[in-house]
Amino acid sequence: MNARLEALLEHLVRTINRGRIRESEQRSRMALQWQPVDRLPIILSCPLPQEPLFQPYPVAETFSDPEKMLTNELVHAFGTSIAHHYLVRDDLPLTVRANFGTVVVASMYGAPVRQVGENPPWIVHTDDHAILLGDVLNQDPHDLARGWAPRVVETMQAYHETLSQVPELRDLIRVVLPDLQGPFDSLELILGSGVYADLVEEEDKVDAALDAISKTQVALAHHLEPWVTDGRDGISHQHAVPLRGRILLRDDSVLMMSPSMYRDQVAPHDDRVLGALGGGGIHSCGNLGGHASVFLELLHIQSLDLGQPEMNDLGAIYALAQERHAPLIRVVVPEEELLSGAVLDRFPTGVVLCHRADSWEEGGRVIDGYIAAAEKRAVRV
Image (cartoon, rainbow, N blue to C red):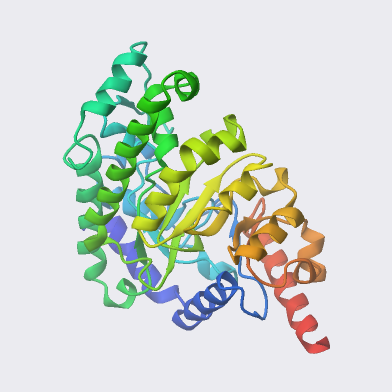
């Protein structure tokens, strides 16, 4: 173990409040199950402090060095920081993942990966669209030695070995699944925007391709189970937030098709993956519009993760989600709703809140104000 990571882990042993972490886990579990809560769980997202105790490594260095990737996951991921968590009283879950971005499943179908500067890896599209679609159909969906999958396994094994050396942390820090996208999002990464024409012109081939990618996603998730320490209690984590279910499918690309096309051609594959893995959530950025109700029709959906909640009618989606007891994840509300406690009248339970701040000082002030408002509300009730 390199000295920098060793110092970071020693710092976490000194500063993590085990009792507070367990309290936050219980609060999140109750909210996700639509049970009464003292307050909704809330997670702060903000830049690192101006003089952070620990600095992340350059992103490009992490893809071939599991210790550097683990360091970055602990220092600053998705706007949160386990290393600096002691500075605020939010409900951040302690999670790390093998962070190879969105490309893992797509790379397993021969899609070339490029990574530049501090950007996450991305898929490079080619002009041979028809050939690429044929390649997807001709590959063994259960071959897990392809693409970047071996890198993921190596990284997760390294995480497991490192954390096993720190008994004070190994049962607190959860190693979660990497981003496995969703069947259609992975297919769109492989084929590019031409996939939308294929939905009409090559419907059977697209269906077969989505079936293959679904099988790969399920097989890889099962393959990684020995190193995943998350989800066994029915609560898993992605994007540094808790959700109900065992996996989070990404469905950003489906917003480019109609809700009815999604229902007919993509939803069965999403639901098959969710069902095979014990249920889970759907994530989508942007304005979900009519897609929200179709997502919530899925038999095995257990959570709905909003990448851009400010673009959505939260009241309408909350009403739909309440019918299914599928909690809403990463809900953002105006600061005044947190400080007044009004958010708890609007959403009594079934929601995980996020608050975005420009600094730890500002964020900590709002979190403290929200907790105080919730305590006053409890006294009045």
